[in-house]
Image (tube, rainbow over all chains, first blue to last red; front, top):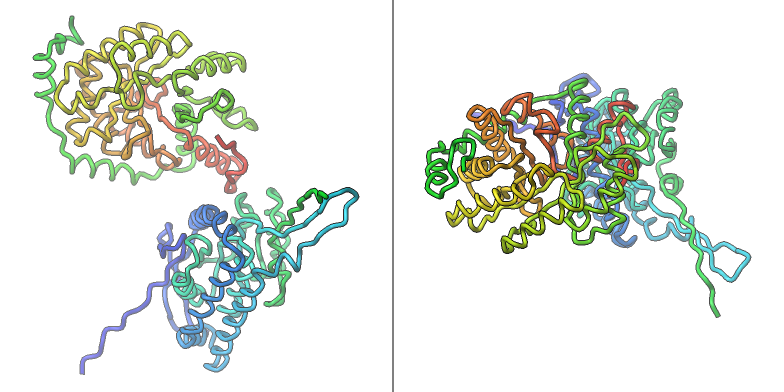
Length: 281
Length: 315
């Protein structure tokens, strides 16, 4: 019996709603935890990062202008799409990390739940972080949280899917656009996640996904003047100092988190806008 | 009258001259332009190219909504593109509508930019649809107001219906008005000329009639300055120089928005017309958004990190 020729997936980047290869033409091998070859992934360069930031910047005003309800719905839709492909994602996680089938399925379920959890926050942020402030004068004074702009994320290395979702979901839900670097050693889940996003009504450019080396790209994330915030939860803590230093030039908001589900992850990448309004009679 | 000794100004001689021009190999032109666009220009060459491109920009605002304030801001930017860095060269010229020429000239003089010329779009820009008297007066007005460069449009309707001598005489007449006071750039509006053969014909027609520059487009019609069109025009000025020993300038305008686009143009110039044309007196780029991208690339090269549009002016 003649065997069927296996069709291997090409893992590419996700920039502005398209799946380009890296402009550098480089790739690197992704191996299983036992050292077996799994796939070739793009080794993104700083120029891919630059292109992704341009796309994210262009998409940002539109995404922030969408209603909170709409953003929540789209995030929920991402969760739906992910849920439907649980088995594929679980298998990919097992191959990369060596986790058991049960553990991998659990990670996918956790990622879906986390997406739903963050989706729910979209219309509650003004109540959580906004306020009416007492002022001396015939004015209402409101403080309203608003999206920061373009936010970078360097995803955690250990949990290839859950770590990635925990990095990008809180950035997106408030109206930021994101440029995310997948786990360097296990990027396949994040790249497959791009396929989920591409079928979830998320506008092009709102989420851009790169695969590559942290050590090469993190300094470019930090120094890029058009990135307003940066989640460095996935970077080893001994590198946090130098990254924060590199981000000083444009007063970049740089944070690292340990918990996956905390509203602080959303609020870290939001601005406060204060409005004065006459009370009248 | 003799025009470079090539035509005598009669319909028949112009027709015969343009007829004997070889046709353009369209596939070949596209392939060559595409090949030249793949050249990689890096580090010191790139730094040189960026500064050269900045000095070649005709910083342009051609909108119905232009105000004196906007034109003055544009002039300030033209003279000192990056207010934080005095090593950035000033641009080639400021290009405005006729009624803004006086305001631009005045403001440039006020800020000490006496050497920066003002270019005016003229002859019923952008359509070129007006009587000859209006076109002549339009040009005269601009020169009186201080324009040192006139960007005129040709009558594409006349060109396409074969009334070549009309187009020719029009350019000759406008050139006479310009005299020694203003440089004449002739806009061919290549997006409406349909074929590259027509582009070549129109280029020669404009050069014979006395243009100092031939310019691709008004910026109001797409496609504008595509690479094959610029290639054909650069070949035309090169061949014209071989015939007459006179160097005519080229100005692509419209659609050149990024540093990459601009550098591709410079490569085309160097490889087609030659390095003599890599000079603001013979090559200009008509643009508005391009300057900001050039400045951001320049910042990236000097600072070592990527720049943000928040740090350049919105115009």
